[in-house]
Length: 638
Image 1 (cartoon, one colour):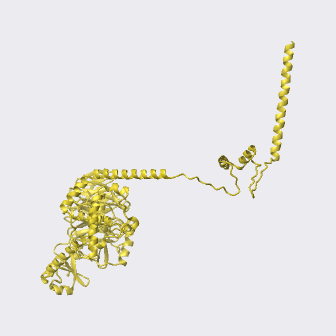
Image 2 (cartoon, rainbow, N blue to C red; image 1 turned 30 degrees about the vertical axis):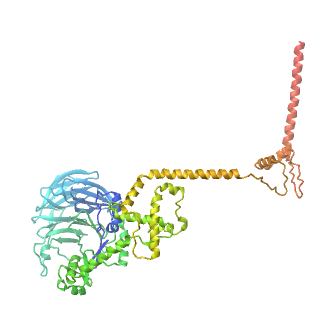
């Protein structure tokens, strides 16, 4: 966020950061945000708040939810939703837009004035109707009570288009040759137009007569002012019922504060009831400025108030990359005191800002030996960089020395190779605090004799020998306490590289060889275990019986285990059935609990009733048998 101040009025620029191209993917945009500090620190209130080439006009809807802007090329209009902080829609047009007006509270009714004399009406769904005015238009206003559009431009007449009847009305004839701007007072409906002669004419729409004339050009000329041309009216705006602001092409009036963007301004829009300014510039990116003196931040970005308050509580000095801050004493040493008051020096606080290129040139002329000092510093930096690339003996840890040496060699190869420099740099394990314990705790020592290590590293035999040899040489150098490293004896680098390439080609054979060795070792271990099993002699095992128990057989223990899984009632019934309930242990000190199952009175009555029922059924069967026998005897008699 860039902060500027004029007349003790602070202006916060919210769009001073770098903009990212539209064709970049989200992944590349995130990568740029990580690398570039300016992109990461920028404040993006509304996403993609820009145009392809140039933005011409910008306005805010009456409800404050939508921001509409027109631009080129291709001519288009973009609508941004402040509630979603993103682009809502985009429509391309046939020609460039001079200005436009939002007739509704939202974006559902829009009127565009084009540079080819066409007036284009848009609805919520898109294009609705197009018509043409007789002369080229420069500005227009909408009169709500009568539904009339007033157009001013390269003519002395003010054209009226009635939207209710759908036809043009009689124009208003002014005394000016051309009219630049116009506005309608929302309180009493007075229509005012600004002419190129520097006058403001006011008209009453009800009577269609001129009711006032104000000569601003004559009143703005004073004895102290210097004017090279006739002040024409370039801006006109009502504020309430009795106040009107008039802007001239010569820039006369009392300055409250000023904005100095890098590119020219095409249009300025004040967000309603706030201190936010929206600008349309001669650049793709639209400007957003926040001036707390004018009012609070809008509701959709209310966090700006807290942010600006924190910046005011903790002020920081402004630093410019392209300028050098110098004091009066520095100017005297450089011999540039004669530049005070010229455009080469910009006064700021107790000193001046000057171009950094001019500062370096003058300093080189004053001190011709500055280049030699600069050259020596660069050579010293190069030497330090080459020393840093060497293998530092003090950096080798106590644990996993071979692994640390391997990581150092890989880092050196990565720096030497050109194609790996373009790749994304990965973090080094040696400098990462998360893996610090791996080189300090002996429990993390790599076991090179394990099966997993030998299968995953088939070429470790030859490469590890070379690394161990180099490690021994480094340890010898450490004991000798020499400052410079000696080249280890052995084969030259070309032979080593060729040998390593041959090893990489034969890695399959090495894996098979290691697997065969592991299988042989496993076979030898199985044979040794078999011999040990054959030599072992089985000895009888003795079991101790707990006190108070008497051993009978192993079947009793199995039945007891089964009984323990059943309920107490079931166990008592089974023991009573088997006759083992009354058996008492003969061991000294043993005790026995005897349980007697008692029946309740209800159970007794139920059993008696069942008994009587069975007796009755028996008696009935006997009587039925006697009847059948008599019947048989009677039939046989007859």
